[in-house]
Image (cartoon, rainbow, N blue to C red; front, top):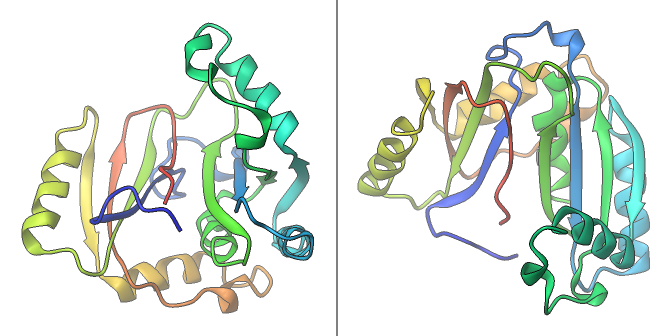
Length: 214
C-alpha cells in the first residue's frame, strides 16, 4: 500500500449523522474503490461481490482504465498540462457505488478497505442542493504517532476555517463508534476489525468532503 505521510493513515471527511445540518434520511454518500494495478480477475470479482453484499449499497458500477482516462480528461479539460504525460494504462480501475444510509458509510469504507485487490477507498457526499452546511471530519492517526506529532496535527486542524467541536478518540472508541452505528443493519458490525489507529473528530462548515489516498 502507498503511504503519503508517516503520521496520518488517511484523512476522511464524511457526513456524520450527529454533525450534519440536514435530516439523516435526506442524504446519501458516493463510494469509490480504486483497485491495485496488479489486481487479478478473481480479486476484482470478489471485490464486486463483497461490495454488492454491503447493506445500503446500491448502484454498483465498474470503471475500466479507458473510462477512467476519459473521465479525467473531462475533469481536467481546462488544465490539459496535468494530463500531458498520462495514458489510459496509468489509470486505476475502480468501482463506484451509492451508500444510501449515511450512518453506515464509514463502516462500509473500513470493511471494503481490507478486501484484497483494493488500493484506496473514498467517500464523498452525493451532489445535492443545497449542500450540507455542516459536516463531520474524521482524521485517522497512525498507531506510532508521538504526542508531538499529534499536537501538530491538532493545531493544523484547529487552524482550518470553520473547524470546531474537536474531540479525540482512542482506538477502542474509534472501533466501537462505527459498530454502534451499524448494529441491526445486517452483519456489517461483525465484519469490522479493531483498528490500530486513533481518531480526531470535529465539526466543519466546509460544504465538501474528500479523502486522501493511503
